[in-house]
Length: 429
Ligand code: SDX
Image (cartoon, rainbow, N blue to C red; front, side, top):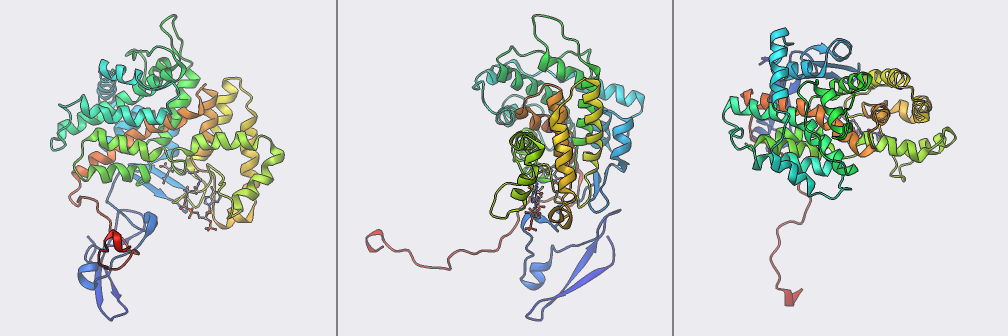
């Protein structure tokens, strides 16, 4: 704790001394915990644009410089040299694993990929056209009805078991959700495959014949999962932390995270980008849609553009845009929507409206192009995001239990409703 403090004096002349709380890097903060006690004032910050809700040592973002680091490692280096399971170990444990640690962790995840047979029956009860994210949040929430022994949030071993189960089982549930959508039988996980190969096999394999996983597809998915694994205190991670702060079980926490991620302003944007590109249709319509995005009377926004923290290019978008070209070339796919997306980016980034507001492509702008090239329907894109982000969610959920300054999350408000008044009987209204 620094010995610096700031003085705040209210219009009534009451002065509060607020300690400055600093992290290892990043902007310092005023600890306003005692503000109300000293002055009778609360702070107000709708959307928490300038409010830190917790301490965390997992992910660091510098939005002005477009920097993203997992446990201090730049995302560019992890994307280039690592793999998703290794990144999962890093986010959960704080250090990169050595060979023995990696092998043991990978085997542990592999051993937990199957789900209870009754969960498979539960999934069969959904309509074929149920939105995959609706199924994901329901089925993951239902884990709380099945995995009782891993639910004691007061036991560090149980908390870790729940985290491992969630990381391992998300792909199995996601693949079953996809199979339910296309009316094919669910596939069981194959333990001889790695994390992304296993997912692709469960999604695209059929019992009737062997399925050969395309290594290009498996590697592309692994890269996307690395890039989507964690992102500091975004809306869905904050949701997981808030639900976790009440002592709720981990499956309820992650189900709430999935629900939050689904929103088009957050993880649902990758699906919305492809729908937007489909609506724009052709380069000749770009100017019209950019004008719509700028028109305050038009609800249309450029999906995949803008970010609460990045006021520079999202480093993940830079990596994904490069990967789009490589994956489409490797798979021999010529997708006109990639050209359309790049032309849209080019025009928007020259437009004063976007430049002045520092609106750049974010992680969702190009990711759908790759998911589409891997044969996924747009409704599965956010499910892929949820598989990856589960690693960040459980890492942050575990960290919350190790952080001394954790209390139940309970924001205050600015009341704008009616002042005190007496009840009037209905015959007098
Ligand atoms: C993710 O938080 C995270 O880290 C999230 C994420 C993660 O990894 O967890 O990075 C993943 O959610 C990425 C964001 C995906 N969402 C989208 O692509 C949806 C489109 N983007 C916007 O809805 C918006 O940019 C947000 C939600 C991402 C950010 O919203 P903010 O921070 O509240 O910004 P704002 O709405 O206050 O916008 C500031 C200005 C406004 O104009 P003015 O009032 O100043 O005139 O920029 C405008 C906005 O109207 N603006 C846009 C725009 N985004 C912001 N105008 C047109 N198109 C857009 N996309």
